[in-house]
Length: 268
Image (cartoon, rainbow, N blue to C red):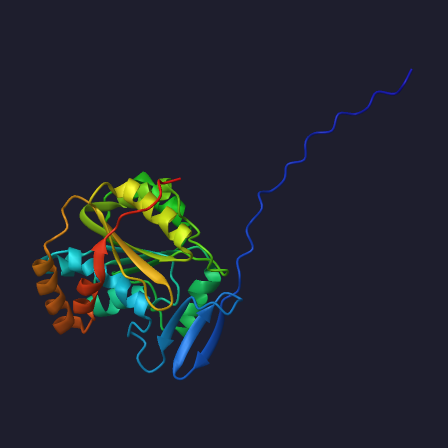
């Protein structure tokens, strides 16, 4: 009689933890750059002016201000998905002085920003959280908790957004309160842009999206908003004048670059 084989219990494997790239630093011409183990620039800071928004596309991410009334700017609750070199986070916290929450998955990026990019410690206005952005926006506890949302989520290869499906953008819509505005950095080939734009439009609804013309580097900022219609051009121009006078942001240029968004493909 053949011996009976023992039944082995299935091996429980620990879930794979993604290996996150190291944050690396370079400097040239008074600018300090953040990289993720590649030559792609994840953010920049002028060493002598650490609060200045140095990169053109980063400045344009602040175009959400145009879509909010000036009397609401001081009370805007901001959420940033992706820390980069902390430029937007520092600007909202230290210049605009508004409540600022930033979600960053990679602890090495957070550490590099605190060591090399003048990111302050968390305080009453600032909360930098090490967490997956998709999980944060999908949490019902954060529904209608923010008025401005900046999304800049690229990995070390910078090929396409890390989070970019319609479910993610619907979750972004969910975390915004009525009157809220989202600014998304899209960088990549035309087909990739059209897919992303279509998903944003599907999540926010007809007539609730616009875009700024691409930068020379190919970054296109898409704006999407909740609970209101796009203000008339003269209203936007007046707000831009106020922004430019108050914070020296090139807001009058943003108005000229702003156009409606008409995605060429259906969302996938």
